[in-house]
Image (cartoon, rainbow, N blue to C red; front, side, top):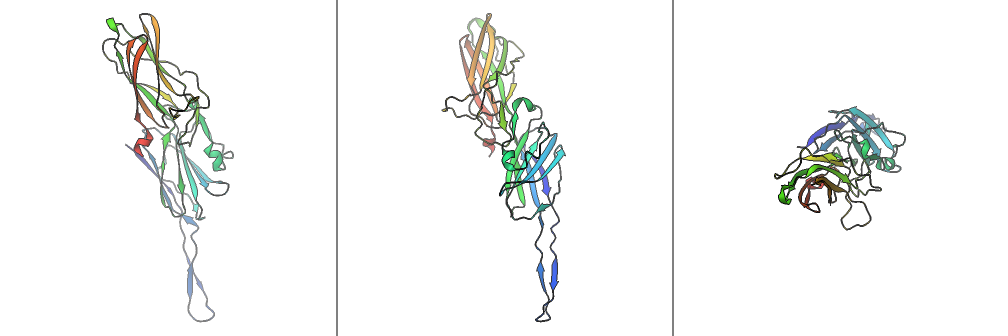
Length: 293
Protein backbone atom coordinates (compact mmCIF):
# COMPACT_ATOMS: atom_id res chain seq x y z
CA UNK A 1 0.00 0.00 0.00
CA UNK A 2 1.37 3.37 -0.93
CA UNK A 3 1.90 6.08 1.66
CA UNK A 4 1.08 9.67 0.84
CA UNK A 5 2.48 12.61 2.72
CA UNK A 6 1.24 16.02 1.72
CA UNK A 7 3.58 19.00 1.94
CA UNK A 8 2.39 22.49 1.10
CA UNK A 9 4.94 24.96 -0.10
CA UNK A 10 2.66 27.90 0.42
CA UNK A 11 2.64 31.63 0.69
CA UNK A 12 0.06 34.34 0.74
CA UNK A 13 -0.31 35.60 -2.80
CA UNK A 14 -1.14 39.26 -2.53
CA UNK A 15 -2.79 40.87 -5.49
CA UNK A 16 -3.70 44.48 -4.85
CA UNK A 17 -5.20 47.08 -7.11
CA UNK A 18 -3.65 50.55 -7.32
CA UNK A 19 -5.67 53.59 -8.44
CA UNK A 20 -3.92 55.89 -10.87
CA UNK A 21 -5.04 59.45 -11.56
CA UNK A 22 -5.68 60.04 -15.24
CA UNK A 23 -4.73 63.54 -16.28
CA UNK A 24 -6.71 63.38 -19.55
CA UNK A 25 -10.12 62.58 -18.07
CA UNK A 26 -11.99 61.81 -14.90
CA UNK A 27 -11.83 58.01 -15.26
CA UNK A 28 -9.73 55.95 -12.84
CA UNK A 29 -7.73 52.95 -13.97
CA UNK A 30 -6.51 50.03 -11.80
CA UNK A 31 -3.64 47.64 -12.54
CA UNK A 32 -2.85 44.45 -10.61
CA UNK A 33 0.48 44.12 -8.83
CA UNK A 34 2.28 40.98 -9.88
CA UNK A 35 2.14 38.17 -7.26
CA UNK A 36 5.42 37.82 -5.42
CA UNK A 37 4.87 34.21 -4.24
CA UNK A 38 3.13 31.01 -5.30
CA UNK A 39 1.32 28.06 -3.72
CA UNK A 40 2.61 24.58 -4.59
CA UNK A 41 1.15 21.36 -3.25
CA UNK A 42 3.63 18.48 -3.00
CA UNK A 43 2.91 14.79 -2.43
CA UNK A 44 5.67 12.56 -1.07
CA UNK A 45 4.75 9.18 -2.51
CA UNK A 46 6.35 5.90 -1.42
CA UNK A 47 5.34 2.28 -1.94
CA UNK A 48 7.75 1.15 0.79
CA UNK A 49 6.71 0.45 4.36
CA UNK A 50 9.76 2.11 5.90
CA UNK A 51 9.80 4.08 9.16
CA UNK A 52 10.94 7.67 8.71
CA UNK A 53 12.92 9.38 11.47
CA UNK A 54 13.80 12.59 9.64
CA UNK A 55 12.86 14.34 6.41
CA UNK A 56 14.94 16.96 4.60
CA UNK A 57 13.46 19.05 1.80
CA UNK A 58 15.72 21.02 -0.58
CA UNK A 59 14.59 23.59 -3.14
CA UNK A 60 17.01 24.45 -5.97
CA UNK A 61 16.85 26.92 -8.82
CA UNK A 62 16.90 24.78 -11.97
CA UNK A 63 18.61 27.43 -14.07
CA UNK A 64 22.08 28.98 -14.14
CA UNK A 65 24.32 27.62 -11.38
CA UNK A 66 21.32 25.86 -9.76
CA UNK A 67 21.72 27.48 -6.36
CA UNK A 68 19.90 26.16 -3.28
CA UNK A 69 16.97 28.41 -2.37
CA UNK A 70 15.87 26.73 0.85
CA UNK A 71 16.30 23.70 3.10
CA UNK A 72 13.84 22.43 5.70
CA UNK A 73 14.44 19.62 8.18
CA UNK A 74 11.73 17.83 10.17
CA UNK A 75 11.59 14.94 12.60
CA UNK A 76 9.62 12.11 11.04
CA UNK A 77 7.35 12.88 8.11
CA UNK A 78 5.83 16.37 8.24
CA UNK A 79 2.06 16.57 7.80
CA UNK A 80 1.98 20.19 6.72
CA UNK A 81 4.68 22.62 5.73
CA UNK A 82 4.32 26.25 4.73
CA UNK A 83 7.05 28.18 2.92
CA UNK A 84 7.31 31.38 0.97
CA UNK A 85 8.30 30.38 -2.55
CA UNK A 86 9.13 33.45 -4.66
CA UNK A 87 7.25 33.73 -7.93
CA UNK A 88 10.44 34.03 -9.95
CA UNK A 89 9.05 32.49 -13.12
CA UNK A 90 11.98 30.05 -13.11
CA UNK A 91 12.05 26.26 -13.06
CA UNK A 92 13.01 24.62 -9.77
CA UNK A 93 14.24 21.23 -8.59
CA UNK A 94 12.73 19.73 -5.45
CA UNK A 95 14.65 17.09 -3.50
CA UNK A 96 13.42 15.00 -0.55
CA UNK A 97 15.73 12.80 1.56
CA UNK A 98 14.59 10.77 4.56
CA UNK A 99 16.65 8.98 7.24
CA UNK A 100 20.01 10.37 6.14
CA UNK A 101 22.52 9.20 8.80
CA UNK A 102 24.69 12.33 8.81
CA UNK A 103 24.22 16.06 9.20
CA UNK A 104 24.13 17.75 5.81
CA UNK A 105 26.91 20.17 4.90
CA UNK A 106 24.71 22.85 3.38
CA UNK A 107 27.65 24.86 2.14
CA UNK A 108 28.90 21.86 0.16
CA UNK A 109 25.39 21.26 -1.21
CA UNK A 110 24.61 24.86 -2.17
CA UNK A 111 24.44 23.89 -5.84
CA UNK A 112 22.36 21.06 -7.28
CA UNK A 113 25.33 19.62 -9.15
CA UNK A 114 26.89 18.84 -5.77
CA UNK A 115 23.63 17.38 -4.46
CA UNK A 116 23.44 15.05 -7.47
CA UNK A 117 26.86 13.64 -6.49
CA UNK A 118 25.96 13.04 -2.83
CA UNK A 119 26.87 9.40 -2.09
CA UNK A 120 26.30 7.00 0.79
CA UNK A 121 28.28 3.90 1.67
CA UNK A 122 26.28 0.78 2.35
CA UNK A 123 27.67 0.23 5.88
CA UNK A 124 26.43 3.71 6.85
CA UNK A 125 22.85 2.98 5.83
CA UNK A 126 20.35 1.40 8.23
CA UNK A 127 18.54 -1.78 7.22
CA UNK A 128 15.76 -1.02 9.74
CA UNK A 129 15.19 2.56 8.53
CA UNK A 130 17.07 2.94 5.24
CA UNK A 131 17.54 6.20 3.38
CA UNK A 132 14.66 7.22 1.11
CA UNK A 133 15.10 9.85 -1.56
CA UNK A 134 13.57 11.37 -4.66
CA UNK A 135 13.50 14.50 -6.80
CA UNK A 136 11.06 16.26 -9.08
CA UNK A 137 11.17 19.18 -11.48
CA UNK A 138 8.86 22.12 -10.79
CA UNK A 139 7.77 24.44 -13.59
CA UNK A 140 6.43 27.93 -12.81
CA UNK A 141 2.91 26.94 -13.92
CA UNK A 142 2.75 23.81 -11.74
CA UNK A 143 0.89 23.95 -8.42
CA UNK A 144 0.61 20.20 -7.66
CA UNK A 145 3.63 17.91 -7.84
CA UNK A 146 4.68 14.45 -6.62
CA UNK A 147 8.09 13.32 -5.41
CA UNK A 148 8.44 9.54 -5.55
CA UNK A 149 10.57 8.27 -2.67
CA UNK A 150 12.48 4.99 -2.82
CA UNK A 151 15.38 3.45 -0.90
CA UNK A 152 18.76 2.52 -2.26
CA UNK A 153 18.59 -0.55 -0.03
CA UNK A 154 17.64 -3.83 -1.73
CA UNK A 155 16.76 -7.22 -0.26
CA UNK A 156 17.59 -10.76 -1.32
CA UNK A 157 15.52 -13.45 0.38
CA UNK A 158 16.29 -17.17 0.45
CA UNK A 159 12.76 -18.55 0.37
CA UNK A 160 13.33 -22.28 -0.13
CA UNK A 161 16.09 -24.87 0.28
CA UNK A 162 15.52 -28.43 -0.96
CA UNK A 163 17.71 -31.48 -0.39
CA UNK A 164 17.74 -33.95 -3.32
CA UNK A 165 20.79 -35.92 -2.19
CA UNK A 166 20.80 -39.72 -2.34
CA UNK A 167 20.63 -41.63 0.95
CA UNK A 168 19.01 -38.62 2.67
CA UNK A 169 22.29 -37.04 3.70
CA UNK A 170 21.79 -33.76 5.60
CA UNK A 171 22.80 -30.31 4.45
CA UNK A 172 24.46 -29.38 7.71
CA UNK A 173 25.29 -25.93 9.08
CA UNK A 174 23.64 -24.11 6.14
CA UNK A 175 24.41 -20.41 5.72
CA UNK A 176 24.10 -17.75 3.02
CA UNK A 177 25.82 -14.51 2.09
CA UNK A 178 26.33 -12.12 -0.82
CA UNK A 179 29.48 -11.45 -2.83
CA UNK A 180 30.33 -8.75 -5.36
CA UNK A 181 28.07 -6.23 -3.67
CA UNK A 182 27.96 -2.52 -4.49
CA UNK A 183 29.86 -0.62 -1.75
CA UNK A 184 28.22 2.79 -2.27
CA UNK A 185 25.72 4.66 -4.39
CA UNK A 186 24.67 8.22 -5.19
CA UNK A 187 21.59 9.07 -3.16
CA UNK A 188 19.58 10.53 -6.06
CA UNK A 189 20.74 8.13 -8.78
CA UNK A 190 17.86 6.33 -10.49
CA UNK A 191 19.68 3.94 -12.84
CA UNK A 192 23.11 2.74 -14.05
CA UNK A 193 24.32 1.47 -10.67
CA UNK A 194 27.80 0.11 -11.39
CA UNK A 195 30.08 -0.98 -8.54
CA UNK A 196 33.37 0.90 -8.68
CA UNK A 197 34.85 -1.68 -6.36
CA UNK A 198 33.61 -4.93 -4.89
CA UNK A 199 33.14 -5.31 -1.18
CA UNK A 200 34.39 -8.36 0.63
CA UNK A 201 31.81 -11.08 1.06
CA UNK A 202 29.09 -10.11 3.49
CA UNK A 203 28.95 -11.87 6.83
CA UNK A 204 27.37 -15.34 6.52
CA UNK A 205 23.90 -15.67 8.00
CA UNK A 206 23.08 -19.09 9.42
CA UNK A 207 19.83 -20.76 8.50
CA UNK A 208 17.74 -21.97 11.43
CA UNK A 209 17.91 -25.72 10.68
CA UNK A 210 19.88 -28.37 8.87
CA UNK A 211 18.15 -29.36 5.64
CA UNK A 212 16.89 -32.92 5.44
CA UNK A 213 14.11 -34.68 3.51
CA UNK A 214 11.66 -31.80 3.70
CA UNK A 215 12.09 -28.49 1.94
CA UNK A 216 12.85 -25.66 4.33
CA UNK A 217 11.46 -22.17 3.84
CA UNK A 218 13.77 -19.98 5.92
CA UNK A 219 12.88 -16.59 4.40
CA UNK A 220 16.31 -15.34 5.47
CA UNK A 221 16.93 -11.81 4.16
CA UNK A 222 20.21 -10.30 3.00
CA UNK A 223 20.70 -6.59 2.23
CA UNK A 224 22.72 -4.80 -0.44
CA UNK A 225 22.84 -1.75 -2.71
CA UNK A 226 21.60 -1.92 -6.32
CA UNK A 227 23.71 -3.36 -9.11
CA UNK A 228 21.96 -3.14 -12.48
CA UNK A 229 24.98 -4.09 -14.59
CA UNK A 230 23.59 -5.71 -17.77
CA UNK A 231 24.31 -9.38 -18.15
CA UNK A 232 26.20 -8.85 -21.42
CA UNK A 233 28.76 -6.43 -19.94
CA UNK A 234 32.07 -8.05 -19.01
CA UNK A 235 34.63 -6.87 -16.48
CA UNK A 236 32.14 -5.41 -13.98
CA UNK A 237 31.43 -7.05 -10.65
CA UNK A 238 28.04 -8.78 -10.51
CA UNK A 239 26.34 -9.49 -7.22
CA UNK A 240 25.95 -13.17 -6.27
CA UNK A 241 24.07 -15.11 -3.64
CA UNK A 242 26.10 -17.91 -2.04
CA UNK A 243 24.83 -20.97 -0.17
CA UNK A 244 27.29 -23.01 1.90
CA UNK A 245 26.87 -26.16 3.94
CA UNK A 246 28.60 -29.38 4.95
CA UNK A 247 27.71 -32.71 3.34
CA UNK A 248 29.16 -35.75 5.12
CA UNK A 249 31.80 -33.46 6.59
CA UNK A 250 32.76 -31.86 3.28
CA UNK A 251 32.37 -28.08 2.90
CA UNK A 252 30.30 -27.22 -0.18
CA UNK A 253 29.63 -23.90 -1.88
CA UNK A 254 26.96 -23.04 -4.44
CA UNK A 255 26.49 -19.58 -5.93
CA UNK A 256 24.26 -17.84 -8.45
CA UNK A 257 24.57 -14.45 -10.16
CA UNK A 258 21.67 -12.15 -9.39
CA UNK A 259 19.85 -10.52 -12.30
CA UNK A 260 20.38 -6.77 -12.79
CA UNK A 261 18.43 -4.92 -10.09
CA UNK A 262 17.78 -1.26 -9.37
CA UNK A 263 17.20 0.70 -6.19
CA UNK A 264 14.58 -0.63 -3.81
CA UNK A 265 14.45 -4.04 -5.48
CA UNK A 266 13.46 -7.27 -3.75
CA UNK A 267 14.76 -10.59 -5.08
CA UNK A 268 13.58 -14.11 -4.24
CA UNK A 269 15.97 -17.08 -4.37
CA UNK A 270 15.47 -20.85 -4.08
CA UNK A 271 18.03 -23.65 -4.25
CA UNK A 272 17.86 -27.43 -4.72
CA UNK A 273 21.04 -29.37 -3.92
CA UNK A 274 21.57 -32.63 -5.85
CA UNK A 275 25.15 -33.48 -4.87
CA UNK A 276 28.20 -31.87 -3.26
CA UNK A 277 29.05 -30.45 -6.70
CA UNK A 278 25.64 -29.80 -8.24
CA UNK A 279 22.72 -27.56 -7.39
CA UNK A 280 20.02 -25.62 -9.22
CA UNK A 281 19.06 -22.05 -8.33
CA UNK A 282 15.84 -20.19 -9.08
CA UNK A 283 16.42 -16.44 -8.71
CA UNK A 284 13.67 -13.99 -9.62
CA UNK A 285 12.88 -10.34 -8.89
CA UNK A 286 9.96 -10.28 -6.48
CA UNK A 287 9.60 -6.52 -6.60
CA UNK A 288 11.21 -3.77 -8.62
CA UNK A 289 10.14 -0.10 -8.69
CA UNK A 290 10.00 -0.31 -12.49
CA UNK A 291 7.15 -2.81 -12.15
CA UNK A 292 4.94 -0.16 -10.56
CA UNK A 293 5.72 2.71 -12.92
